[in-house]
Image (tube, rainbow, N blue to C red):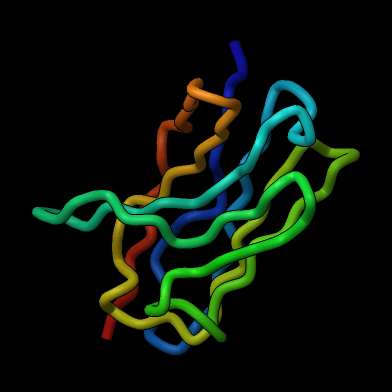
Length: 115
């Protein structure tokens, strides 16, 4: 059973940047993909960015051009670099690992963007 630990959240002003990290307890290349989701109060959890084993990436339209997902295979860590943050980016951000039908989630890290 893999464990995912997110870090890097916090309070930032609009226009600022943050980098989230997701450290996995096993090789991240063993998964079909790693992804970042977010959930704002009263809203459904939504996909923010995904990185596949091949290295291909996809982003939600709302974050394209502002967020970048990347990984460090040696550190078994996936990152989400967030720039030009907006108040509407405020949410709990979750890391996800997927292998076939098995999905694992991290505990989440709070990101709050003040206007």
